[in-house]
Image 1 (spheres, rainbow, N blue to C red):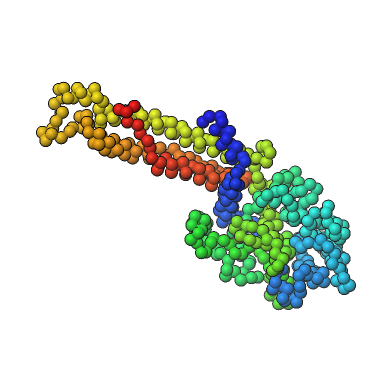
Image 2 (cartoon, helix red, strand yellow):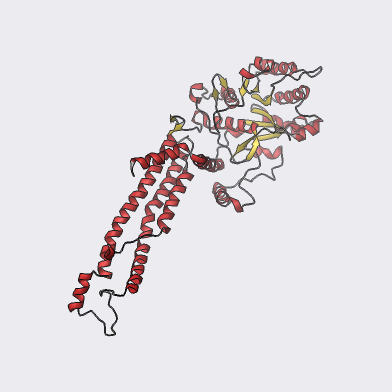
Length: 476
């Protein structure tokens, strides 16, 4: 391949016209995330709990949204009384809505009281301390960033001097479990790996009849593959309707049932607890390749779960080489060049073989004029008893010669086409093998295997079905 063609091909990949490379790359990432979710470890699942505020809670408390500070205090006090290791509130205190009998400072007093008496820290969601107009939030010491830009679909752990929600909760977790939380090892953003199987304890707090049941890994992967390959014809998509993290409706915290209280105490004591909400008309949603649209609090919970499960070996993007292009993207470019070069090499080699075979077979099937003349002079095989033309005899009729030529080309095509496709089929297997190796042996995101497979398959189809043009040796 000429240098100019190589540069043009590389430029197309780097410029990503119409977002085709980005689209296939995202599809590759989502597919691998869905595969990994089936066998994702449940180690972190035992340590993280979400208390969820929904419309049912508003109806049961006769509240409107946003909640009054007084009602929030009741909810937070109940959660803190169950002695969690730490509490994170994924609600924004961007403005002070205090009024007589419903003051924000009372919440501050509640948080400080539990911290001083029981060493339980309450962390608040922070959009950006530098731009916050809330004096309460600016002065509050324990905050975790929940909004950012410039990280695509990655979850940053550190943004300048600010720590994000998952990382600050992970640091709190490590104080009891002795893991490393040195910021030096957590500079790169995290690629959140979602889990598929919901908690075994979920059945004690909510109905699980609409959840995808747990299956063997083999059955789950089979159903996943069928769902993703034939998604247009699947009514029941391979989507988990229940969050991976143990989820407790906020309404249960107000229950006076003793059995419910015992279940809550067992579920929340010494756990990292996050409180979030999803209210009609005020939804905070993110996209999960496993769940579809899901409340944002579960994004922070899943990122924390990843840190607890993988620690400093969490999944991340490959190191950048230059201008936002990382090692995997450079590797993908090299693979594309290899596939393209391989195609040209195959075509060149096959053309050489075809010319050689064509000349050899034509000498035996359709002899040259000189050999034909020699045959006419003294060959005993010139005519058969029934005056039919032998295979070694020259064909004088142009129409009969064309028929022989078509038959000969068809035979050559059938024997050659399968051999031409073999190298590209091996290339497809190589891409799949590399993808599996990246998935198992590295903590980087996957390569754009869907884009590479589409390229390889298209070339394989071209080799199999594109008509071959043969030249008649007698015509030069």
